[in-house]
Amino acid sequence: MEEGKAPDKGAKSPEALRRMIRQCEVTLAQLKGSGAKALSLLKLLDEVRDLMQWLEGRGADLAPEKVRMQTMEGLLRTKAGILLKEIEAVGGLARARQQVNPDESCWWWYLDRAVAEQRRQAMRRWLTIGGVVIALLVAAGLAYQTFFAPSPEERQRYDHLMRAAQLREEGDLAGALAEYEAARALALNDPEIHLWLGVLYEEEGREDEAARAFATAKELFENKAEFFVQRGIIYDQMGRVEATLADASVALALDPESAMAHLLLGSAYEAQGKIPEAYEEFEQAAHLAEQAGNSVLFAQAKMRVGMLLQRAPALPQ
Image (tube, helix red, strand yellow):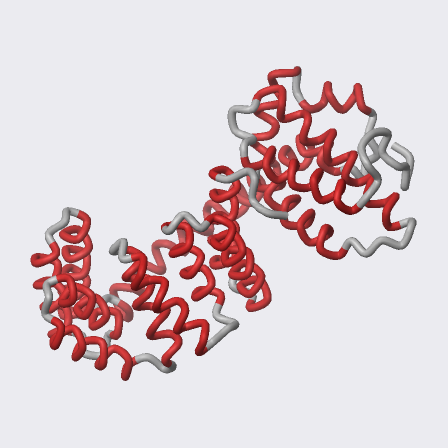
């Protein structure tokens, strides 16, 4: 492919570029089970590349489009294995590449080589450190028993919390409440326990006790925004959408840069069927998490974005 070549078809405009990027995102979200259609994604990426070069050569500012492409390309790398499996329906990527003869800068045509190299490196790492890991595990076990083993009270608290979670899943909120009360007696300074107590007291209609539990939890958090974020997470787990929305909104009013609060707000919007609003909040959560270096939260937000794209391919540009 020639550098900067204009696409042979379609309008040569930023709007056309955004439509093509959108089609890439939708195709990637629906990649699994697409079979031979997966090959169209690689060809569409070629068209996007050519059109971007053509527009930039004429002074177009494509900064937003580049950000979308970087995000989409990152997801493509994580789904490389799925893509290769789907393209097997047309004889595999190597065969398709021979027919297209792409430039090496079009790295998506060479994902099979990248995956193979990753597997070779992983195998070498495992062979190198296998024996060391065994020795370290033995040493860690001895150190744990000697220095870090939890006290009987900590083990009891953990058992109560695990039992409470199990009872919640089974719908026995009264039983879960009793387990949290037992856990509180062993850990008076654990704010999460007080939050769960407050939420479950509300479910039982015990408003005064709920208020006291929330007041205690708020004192134990370092800032008010974190209190509302963590309580909102529990409301979200309990399926209380309006309460989740309210706490996420308060948290953002206190700390607009809270990635977790944006993720929580997006979750509430998704539960309400407000998919475009949820998409925007998840993207903002990913952006803020990336800025903060929180790779776990970034991945979580991007996963929610991907799930929305599968549900609603016609999200706004």
